[in-house]
Image (tube, rainbow over all chains, first blue to last red; front, side, top):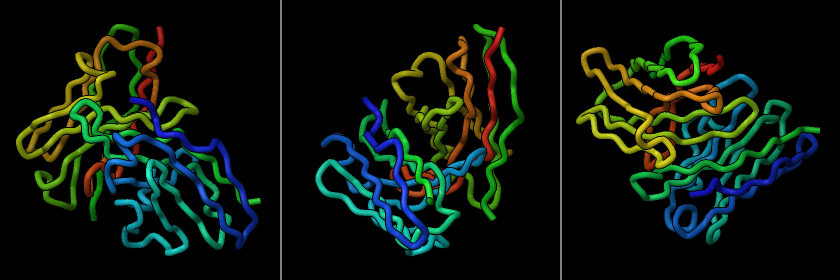
Length: 112
Length: 118
């Protein structure tokens, strides 16, 4: 099982929007509505930002939104703020006992 | 509040084993699956496996089959991840993380750095 594919980097100015893609296969992203997104600041543990494609945990700003079409999921960060600069990882349930969860390659978001 | 507190950093020689602990508090330990995820220096996240703290059943990523063992102690609300036959490529930060729903991980430990070096 291969990692989900994300662009290495994305950027935007404060107040703008940035969208990150996450491409998998019909065995993971396309097969289940169980895509999650994580934000990771340097030296910190990842933080859950989106689960089940588009749901936000309590406390996550509504500037963060998720969607999915076919084998590709997307995370959009609207109204970019300086604190949004971080690495972002997608993940998907993959349904196999030996590969229940697969992560994306990660995207570094830079706020210009 | 939910907390996952992991054991401290380890330095191991190639071929040795390491056992990392993750103590849970603030919720019913047996009600949530626990995952282990690792991150090599400057690299992405890699899923290692999952344990059901209730019954102790496990599933491991194929890459780690035969080298990883995940266990739990319900009396102390602690899960353990043991990785054997360590090699330099196993140098990474190891995280435990609680599953909220189908592989979405809502609480993470602080991470444990394992360094494998001769």
